[in-house]
Amino acid sequence: MRRTPCLRATSAPTRRKAASSWSARRLKTSSKRWRWPVPSEPVHNAGHTHPPRTLVTGGSGFLGSHVADALSDAGHEVTILDAMESQHLRPDQRMVVGDILDDELLASVSNGMDYIYHFAGLADIDECETRPADVAAVNILGTVRLLEACAHVRRFVFASSAYVYSAAGSFYRSSKQACEAFIEDFHEQRGLPYTILRYGSLYGTRADERNSIHRLLRQALRDKRIAYHGTGEEVREYIHVEDAARISVQILDPVYENERIMLTGTEKMRYADLLQMIREMLRGEVTIDMLPSTRKAHYTLTPYNFSPKPGKKLTANPHIDMGQGLLQCMAEIYEDLHSDHGDA
Image (cartoon, rainbow, N blue to C red; front, top):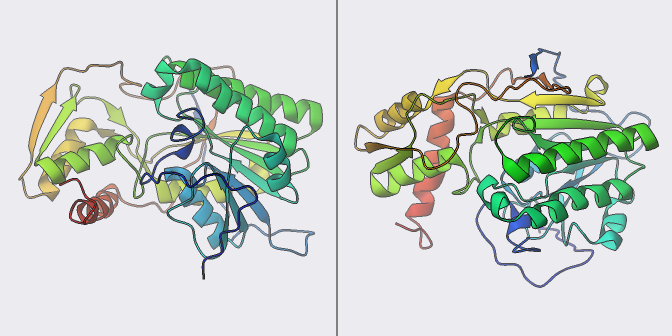
C-alpha cells in the first residue's frame, strides 16, 4: 500500500501531468569540460546507522520526480515536498504537500534530513518573463527560506541552469544567479556544504508541453506535422532525464562538494537532424514546417558563456542513446493520446 502521509496538507490540488508544480499553485505559484571519476556504487551513509534521509523539493515535477526515484534506487529514504501530489510517487517514498514559502513547514520537513535537493520553483522561461515579482518570491525567497531551515544538512543540492550566465533567460536566469550567490554565501557564512547542478537541455518521460522535444513529438504523433520556429541550424547537447537523475545522485561523492557542475549531453545535435530523425522514426509520415522564429533563442551553438564562476562539465557514461530515448518518449505520448484523457 502506498504511504503518503502529509505533514501539512493543502486542499486537493488539480493534477496536471508532469507539471513543474510550483507554477501550478502558490502564485498561479563557458564552462570547462571535465571528466571526473563517477562512483558506480550508491553513496554510503558513512558514520550513520540509518539510510540517508533526503528531501526533494519540487519532486512531483519532470526532473524532480526522476531524481527522487534515482535516490530511492540508491537506498535513500526520500521525502517529496511539493505544492501538488506526485503522480509518480513510489511506495517507498513519502509525500508532503505544502508551500515552499511556509517557514514552519520547511523547518518541520527538513528536520532530520541528511541531504536536500531543491528543484521547486518557476521554471518556464516564457512564464517567468511576464511574472518577475513571482519569480523573485518563489525562486529566490523560497530558496533562501529553505537554506535557513537546513543549516544542519550534509549537502544542499541546487538545480540551476546551463543558462545561468547566458545572455538569454531573462528573470529566470537572474533568479538562478541570485540563488547560486545565496548558496555560496550560506557556505561561507554558515559552513553549509553544497553542490550546484547546472542542467542543460533535458528530455525524457514525464515531460509536458513546456519541454521542447515533448512538444515536437506530440505534434508529430497527434497532427502528423511539426511546426518548428527556427532555421534548423540551432545546436543542442540533449541529456536524457534518467541520465541526469543518475548523475544527480552520484555527485554526493565528496569530490563534488562545494562545486558547480554542468550536466549536458555527450553529443551535439542540430535541430534539422533531430527533426529528420523524428520523421524517419515515424516512417516519413510527418510534415516539417520551418517557420521564422518568434522569440530569442537560448543559444545557437553552445550554452557556454564566459563567466567568473564557470561550472565543470560532468557527462553520463554509459548514457541513453538519443534514438532510444526518443522512442521511449514516443511510446509514452502515444499511450496518452490514445487513452480516455488524451487530446487526440
